[in-house]
Amino acid sequence: MRLIINFRKTALRSGCLLAVLALLAWGCGNDDAAESSSVPTIIATTGILADVVGNVACDGLAEVDALIPPGGDPHAFQASLSDRGRMENAALVVANGLFLEEGLEDTIEAVEASGTPVFRIADHISTIEYGSTDYEDDHDDHEGHDHEDHDDHEDHEEEGHDDHEDHDDHEDHEEEGHDDHDDHEGHDHGHHHSGADPHVWFDPVRVADALPALSEALAAQAGLDAAALDECTAAYRGELTALDAEVEQILAPLDPQDRLLVTNHDALGYFADRYGFKVVGTAIPGGSTLGQTNPAALQELVEVIGETGVSAIFSETTHSSDDAEALGREAGVQVLSLYTGSLGPAGSGADTYTGFIRTNAKRIAEGLG
Image 1 (cartoon, rainbow, N blue to C red):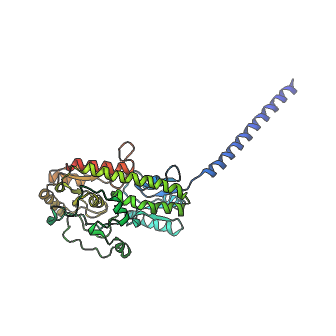
Image 2: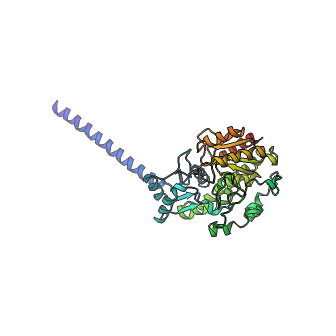
Image 3: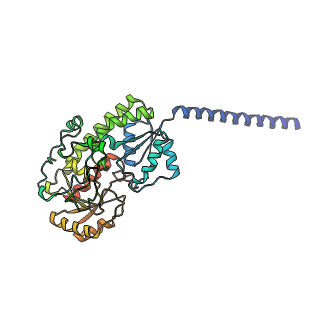
């Protein structure tokens, strides 16, 4: 009887051992499969850029992660040690450039110096200067902005937006570092700044024009399949072109004299340039949310709002609305919130780049209509 029991125990132990060995072999096989199916990781600074990159590297060509969390302000965000590690281990870092990511500049430069390639999308976009879409009393009729029919997108793509009369020397500005634009006289309603405006994503046509360069960087520096990238890029460019036409229709009911914007900080210059608006002023001076409000300038802006008949002030989801709310109360106009430096949460309608642009256009049309 004891021999039978021992035999049974031995058989049971042998069976357990075989089972464990089988599980280990299965696990090792899966590790090999996971390694063979792994894809490069791309780190984008903002969720907006991450969504754009994900559409160019579509169908799982790469794993795309955003560095700045949803709702984060790209002007103010600073990287932790783990954030720096993620960037250094990425196949490619995609940044905006033009000093948008103020708190990240040193880290991005250090990561690039360590050998991680960095693609700055603003380097591949026809930029405008701060203040170029400011309201001017002698241009009340918005001459030069035939926003009723922006149906010449192909011309923009082929000519590099040469039909923006005021911005036909962008390449010179990029090469010279924009040092020659330090005197925006006559625009002292929150525009004490100069140089190229970094908020390039507010023009979907400009973003569409930068996609081929992004695709080339993903192929050359991250090793992604060029043919697959070309297909994804063509499809996404078509989506952005359709979005631009949709935004035109959303804004079509607004008369030229109603296309006046007062915002929290100077973030909507490209939107104004694309769709025929003028920026009357901002609650926070300059193109960064890190600036400080000026009571005298705010009072002057209240007077300008009254003179121009602006019907709404636009605050931001990434920044306190206190200044905009105070300005609205003083001026007697409503305050509506826009998504500016970050996508919205899931279900907000602004949780993709196309939804972000569409939602903002609808809110602007609602506020000024």
